Length: 321
Length: 296
Image (cartoon, rainbow over all chains, first blue to last red):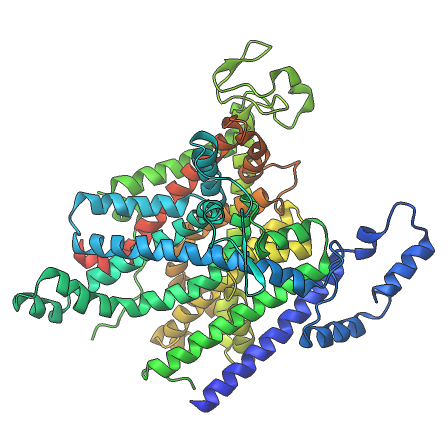
């Protein structure tokens, strides 16, 4: 087991190294930061001086080594647009993304799991067919268009909720949080609902198929024939057996939600890291894009690593050679 | 002794008979395809031809008359462009990108999966590590990051989407091909001195392709949505070749002033198309699942 974990960590490290190389070379080939930063009145000499001050006149491998060294010491460079350290920018916006993603996950789980259990217990009920069709529709409506619908209905027509921005924030632990104020929550509700739709659909389907499978098992038949009341059947016997895969998928999905928040944040002008990524792509702000890619890669590689190791620890049937 | 079998691809009738919604989805898919192919013939105007646009016709709601007496059934945008025509041409771009991306991604995935299974060794290890790398990112984010590197354009969107698709296919095909390789007919073919290429393409490919065909509709609807999302965000197709996603983005700024049709109509078309593909995809997946088939 120990050797498996060590090898798995080694693989992740190699993966990260390759990704950093791909990202760096890719970004180097595309955008020319000198063209972005130089004013109209810049002469050729000014441009050269600018390139030299950014370290762009050195050979590519040297630039990469310098970049890698900086990254390992937590220095992602300065944003060309904001003229501030990139890491500060990202950590400043991370709370906005995190609180929205968490609210979306809570909404998704709180609606999806009960709905899925009910559908699984009432397979022949007409409402179950309606729920099943609704989840297909929910899957089929692209995330960004759901966002537009939410804005159209709740902001333009009903005028209940604001369509953009973050509202009032309260400083806590060195960052501003919206979930502590009524105004902030009102701003967060639409974007979180937007992200939650996909979660609700997925959780409903997952819970429903899990429930259907468990209800066919012999131990459920036995429990029912003992005359155990229905609520106890669900609480004690059903939930415990379907919850394991649901918890796993929910954990994995948290990472995917942070990635998907790029779309939601852009539509709702929610000032999180996803919007920062797209704004930086539009403005060719290379250090921010590179830092985002590296950090998101680290996050996903870490999530996959933890899941793999947990699986190996929890399930003795899995043998890795 | 009966061996566990990979289900062979059944005929369309066997899959869709008695299932009204998926059948409707299949018909809808055909309809959208026909509309996209026939767009130049049936669209009231060519939305790319500046000469045909009249700025006086700008922002007309649906079913109003234009200056030259036609009826703009679905309204016009700020430049006086007929929404119906724009949607028909946008449908072409959306479908073109999705179909080409899926075709390229699946072809690459099938070939790499087969080679991986047949050759094993370091080729297998390399391909599988590349698969792991690719699938560890959500599709849309991977595409955004790739487009941040490549820049925008129809060809670049196709490449970015195909890179998201090949890995899933390669993994599935490799797994199926590995079990197929244990069968006697492959051993017989090898003993018969048939070349590796021929074994791969004539023996292994037909017997490993079924799971890919089952996943095909899902891949297409995924690619349609991904392209629309990228174009909506402004990192997808260029303004000169507007897909449905870009039309929605263009109408977005008029949404808050109540001019809903400019972005809502392309959106409804997009959703209808994706819904059609998805009900077909669901049916095909359920049909391929023996556990569910037994319960029917």
